[in-house]
Image (cartoon, rainbow, N blue to C red):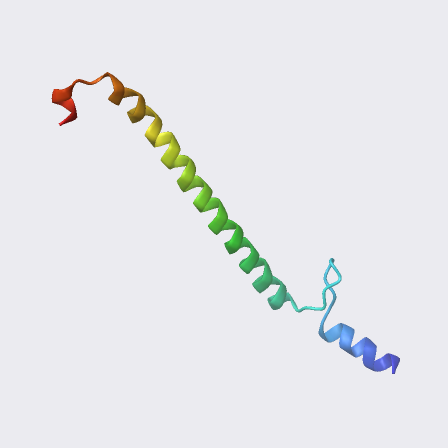
Length: 70
């Protein structure tokens, strides 16, 4: 029985977190997590850029006359 457990451990090594996964599975999981975090970061950058690009234009519209508004 101990021999089977030892063979199973060599075929599928445990990672630092104690997960029973191969190197390819670990890399695949890390890639999925990183792409998910990247989607969140890109959305945050887009929202921040939108607010920062509105600020210079927003303050100038209150001082223009009716001719410039049309």
